[in-house]
Length: 208
Image 1 (cartoon, helix red, strand yellow):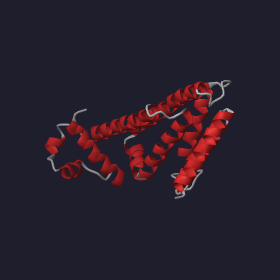
Image 2 (spheres, rainbow, N blue to C red; image 1 turned 30 degrees about the vertical axis):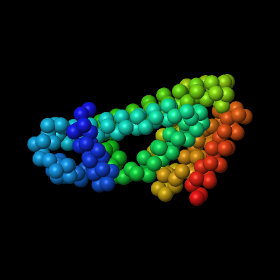
Image 3 (tube, helix red, strand yellow; image 1 turned 60 degrees about the horizontal axis):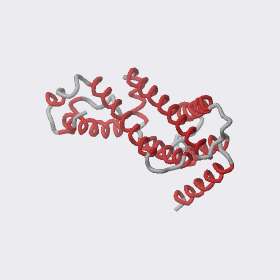
Image 4 (cartoon, rainbow, N blue to C red; image 1 turned 90 degrees about the vertical axis):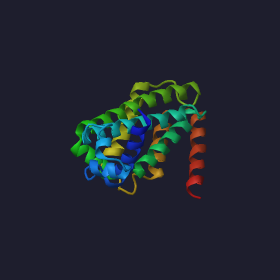
């Protein structure tokens, strides 16, 4: 992806996150970028193509952010918390209208985001389980595929089901409880010690 298109998609992201997708026209995008529509159409075919490229870029950005956690020296439990905090921040920044518009008016692109999210969570949890077992933080007597699917199932239920009030869902407390629930079921005594230490650190950080 060239730099010009990246800059366009960053501005489009700002607009979509603020106003949703449906209300933003190609004229709006061109105006915000201070370019002509003719110039804009050198990079995208139409609005559907623009939304598709926006979705692709969102998927790529999230993958890159998550990959950073793999290379920073975190243990498996710390890694889970770091990624969950990042995902929590994304949800808090998200305008509900953006996902609603994507789902209603661009179902093909919406399904692409769902597929990428599910595959990403499942594959990541598999890697995290293997890492945790190697570090002695997780039990060895588990079926990793089943645990990864259970984690995905719980994550999707928390996201899609109307179980939590709007003000509850973006809270860090909910994410901590979900991780606490997940990790305690798979952790060794060593892992429980690391988990409890991490929870205390978060409580201190968020109660300042």
